[in-house]
Length: 113
Image 1 (cartoon, rainbow, N blue to C red):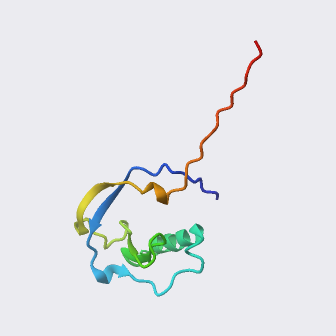
Image 2: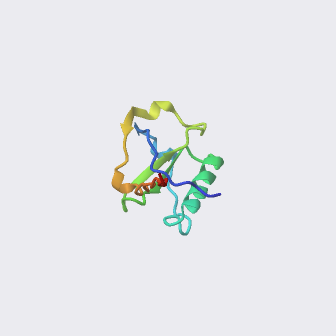
């Protein structure tokens, strides 16, 4: 499957969530090439979602080394909306993190008079 790249990823929202620590999976390792191959990291996340082992999983962020994200599985039976502390709040991605949009050139054909 080929994925279409787009800069059109708005609107996004953020929430502040407090998940009980015992319910957050902290993997000992991640698949080889998870940083460079989006298909590898997606397959890893999809497998976690389908297994429903925990309602949350700690994963390193690629953009800011040393920082972490917590993925939430709202379909997990132990997930609770009471964990939401605040939100939704609008979120806009910094344009410097997104690939540049390609400008399309319009083709003009000149007609002889």
